[in-house]
Amino acid sequence: MLRLPTVLCQMRPVSRALAPHLTRAYAKDVKFGADAPALMLQGVDLLADAVAVTMGPKGRTVIIEQSWGSPKVTKDGVTVTKSIDSKDKYKNIRAKLVQDVANNTNEETGDSTTTASVLARSIAKEGFKKISKGDNPVEIRRGERNNRLCPHKSSNTLCLNLKVTFLNTNIMVKYWILVPDKLCFHLLTVSTYC
Picture 1: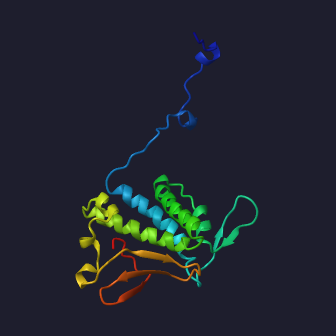
Picture 2: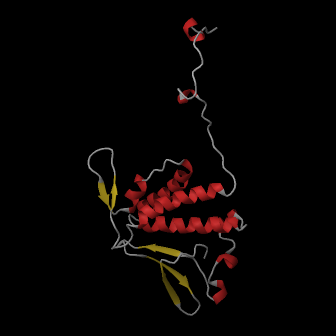
Picture 3: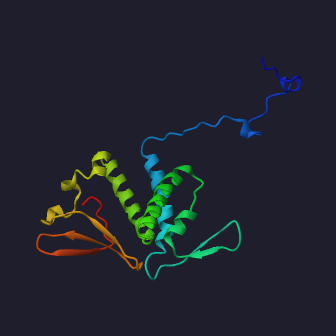
């Protein structure tokens, strides 16, 4: 049997205001309804707005505060995404997902992390917009509803595999939509479900 010393038995309970570390912290905080996507989109916007200013040859530089040494001045999208950490955990959840997009793009192509982050924001906004209108999230992810979601179906064009070509010159992102008669070229237009 384990016995507590008499000193511990005689102690008064400590107030939660004086010792917040002694209060119980629950493992999960669950949110339902329209509040959760709105908070997560705020995190996406926070990260994408910080990264979007570095896009293109005329993009601006970002100054990042570091805990050691002088601040870092960079125009690299993945460096900016890695440095962003929100105090609000709901904003941080979605921001971390966009950081994963930028990291995966950096590993595969070595460039275009800014473009990938901006495209991820557009895809997230369109996805949440479709879900709030009542579309099935699983079908949206699978892309099974191309007929309704593709904006080019009404104009007798044929939407085939959307290919995002990341340019190593950090100028722009191109994607091609195949049309029956000709090849259409669009710059920075996001139609995520074609």
